[in-house]
Amino acid sequence: MLCRPCCRAARAAATSGGAGRAHTGRMLDNIKKDFTSTTAASAPAGQQGCEGLTIFVLHVRQGYDDRRRHMEAMMQAHGLHFEYVLEDDKSDLTPDVVGRYFAGDMARVQAATSCAAKHLAAYRRIVERNLEGALILEDDMLLHRDFNRVMGECLAEVRRRHLDGALCSLEDSLLKFVPRSQRRRGVHLYPAQRDRLGGAYYCTRGAAMTILAEAERRKCDRPIDLFHSLLLSQGLIGYYWCHPCIASQGTACGRFCSSIDRRGRRKQRYRRRMWRLKLAYKRLVYYLR
Image (cartoon, rainbow, N blue to C red; front, side, top):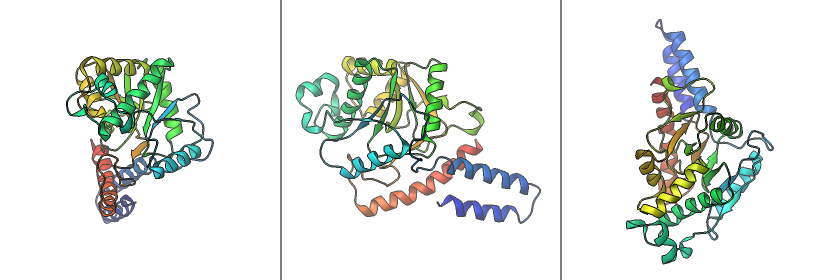
């Protein structure tokens, strides 16, 4: 990781002199720990913490086999069971389907509309099955090592704090984090004023009902994460950021090409390198806030 040589170089500079040498060394250790503790990687098979968690993975019926293989191997490594949401591919977007929920630029057959429709399909499953909530993942997500443990603690926190009616963002794809000054021991979920994309989040039944009702009433005229942000700004749903983040979006960090914006391999490699640099920098920034 690019942050490790950066940390080593900074440590060497710190040890060259100054009264703050010991403090700087401890700070660098803490930043490195904060970064590496949530690096995306497979967990040991059978890792516990998410018993009873319903997981919906948004995928398409044909194509993107690399994402399917990735998701199935990763979920097996984490010992997690899931089900695909395969309906509402672009070929399924009839005028009736589009007209029920969408308006404006979203009221046409395109990848963004199909993606939003799949999120809405997951919400319908939550409501129809009377689930307390579900984890919703797009098929390019990378789960971090400690996903099971932190996710289990988040579920307990949702119940303990009665957060029905909320979405809980789990990902670091926008490089937005909870400032260190706001973090509290034993707390993972912090109220937020904006969304953090829609690649990995826990959706409560109350939030699912509200989003479905608003999509039918006013129509969704923007990508689903921006629709979440609109409802949040109007006080219709709650929104929480998880700390530490426990998932990364593969298209954001250069692991996969986006289904909406297909780019070449060179662009993908560049994005991967820039992601690592930005991630290390942003973790430092939010650590100091």
